[in-house]
Length: 422
Image 1 (cartoon, helix red, strand yellow):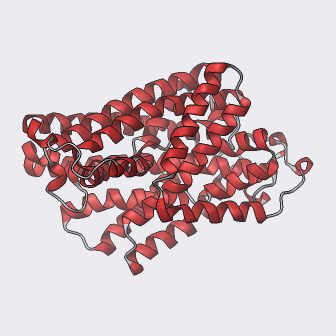
Image 2: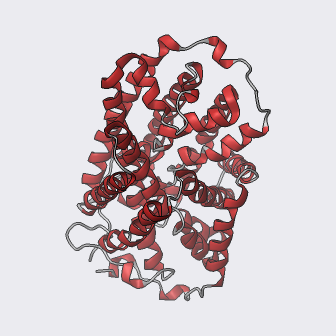
Image 3: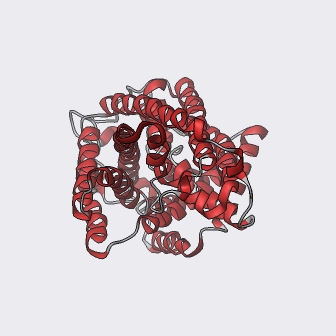
């Protein structure tokens, strides 16, 4: 009998959640949102930080209610039937295979700017980051959790250095005029910031591997919400207050913040932060995505080939191997066709918003109690409002949903029980 191993505590759970949420967005989105909405971008950051609370709590309640590696796909299946589970599984195929290479490119781009590398060198380093994340995840979830926690501690310390070094340069004049472009760009910023606030759902994919999910999942999410919210608001506030977003057009505002006081040393610190953050993001994305594919294959929604765990590591090793192909395609498109990071971020962000909407609606239908359903309804409204500002990127989730609807769903009784998977 080969099953997922129950070894996670709230500490590893918090580390992996923070690593997943506190992603590459913090490297570029404080600058991009400020360029889009001016000082009013801080409203978008505050709104998303506050709105993360009901969404994180809802995902925690769902993970306890249904501790299944399928995550949102399992919740949708339970709430709306097998077809919904299939559609969600297909939707997920449009997220991590694009989002993980995009995160790797952001981190490698920071290091490339410091070392004056060519675009090809940046892509090569991004490939190395992806390969490392796949390899570490291969060695097991406990080792993966320890690695994520260590990365989060290092990131938090370095980001605090960035904020403190920039504080002497913050000016009240930087916040005037507060709404230079009106309110619409603030809404667009909220939609864009979904990239920075996705990751709460990963706790569901890992829920089968917690020693005590009822106790540890809420603890992990509480710590994660607090750490992520404080760091995001601090970095975005000083980015606006120092007008760092005016100083570089390519979005590397964090390097400007640290460089204000620390010069060349600050540039090195920035590169280290970028590599750690992007690695942490990919690390958690890949861990959660691999469990999703494994769970979907276990129910028959994806090829049974992936319903297999390594007999010793108890990891979905075949999923890690399969991710090499889309990673290579995305990185190759950047190298050959010069695909922009903005494009790579926009498409999976649109899919994530739809997935969160489905998860909140499933929670509203499944979870008992008025307060739980109210939180789920609030999360659904937030996601629905964000969809208004997605634009053309909405084509991808629509196309994937249609594909999931069109594909034949196997009969439920053909699903493979976990204890029979070798």
